[in-house]
Length: 88
Image (cartoon, rainbow, N blue to C red; front, side, top):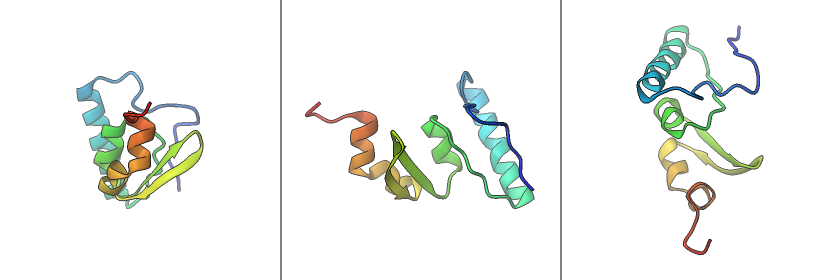
């Protein structure tokens, strides 16, 4: 069984902070109560990091890092791609 919302949709796009929190709670509840794996393709990093056990960070379709949320957030390539560097 699968649940889906279609493609090319940002589930958190246009939501305020409270709505993102409620969405995260809903996704966690669906995952936990239905014992489902969730594949979340999302740009809202706070939402992703609050839900995910495992993260794959991409930059223009190229995998930069993979691991726990903490490992990915600390990865130098991810930091450079998403926050920039002093050299840029």
